[in-house]
Length: 419
Image 1 (cartoon, rainbow, N blue to C red):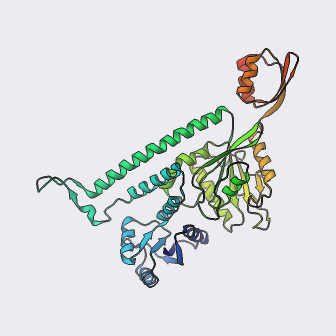
Image 2 (tube, helix red, strand yellow; image 1 turned 180 degrees about the vertical axis):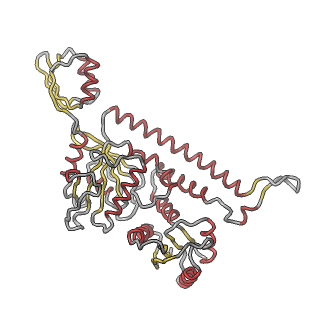
Image 3 (cartoon, rainbow, N blue to C red; image 1 turned 30 degrees about the vertical axis):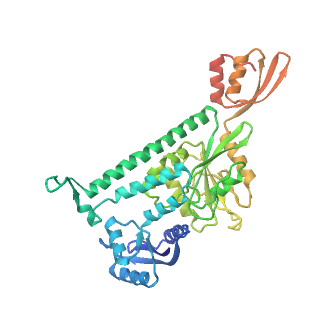
């Protein structure tokens, strides 16, 4: 579809090339769009009926008509009335920022969970825009003839229909959430830590995810390539962990999307380690990093906990291997890993850094038990604490990897510990 992209700056705002470039990249990420013009306009204030001023509106209308433009994108929030009036005036489809992001998400979701979350976001967005935007919403439907009473207005019927759909979709998402809780509890029971990859969209999270052994996910040079959460087990024996790759962040992520994707995003809050992937080849890397940390705080993550967050500066092959200071001020150099996920540079150090962080409180030691102490031996194996064992006559030597809490539980269960 032939598309016209408009970024708006108000007179009381400074020009923001980061904001303008981001919206253009969002538009480019939809393959169905063919962008014919990308402009930045200044407004003193928004017009209550059309958002745009009359002068700008006339110029845009002429270009749309002369170039057969079918879609106009505006990087601001439009009221339902403004959107309707613009579509009538321009004789083209009009989408604001939220509408564009919803379209992108809708085109990316593949799993049942992802599609449910996108559907919920669409429904919440539609519900927020159910005001008297169309004349048919003024009509009322009642009984037969003239004696049936006024009945309900069309807008009330539409609102009721949307509410019913939202309830049904939320029930389905809650089932997914319960499944996640079961999986999380099983992981905690087995003492397997979770590592979540976060970052600005297109920072290279999926490429890094694929650099780890086993299952791969889609990695493309476009925004929101990954919507559905992916998990896989990594690490060495007794230093196992699960990594998670989910949706990337952007500035001003629409509220409806945050609500809809909470079942996915809440996994980040439960993770043992957060790996923040930053595209250091991006000229707006510092702005992107700020957006990510603000989003993490909105999700309830303490970004001041330097032991829980590490930064991965990706795409150093493009940035000329320039070394950047940490974007999170509490981090020290040891919490920063410079890599190229695509070229597989610096990955060994990152893998070791993740393991060292997750297992920094683990203790490796040997204990000697009598072969008859089957309950103790069984407990240690059931809790996956045994790295290796060696049998000699009536005794068994066990090499354990555990932490202080696991030691305490063992002592509570079996009173004395034979060393």
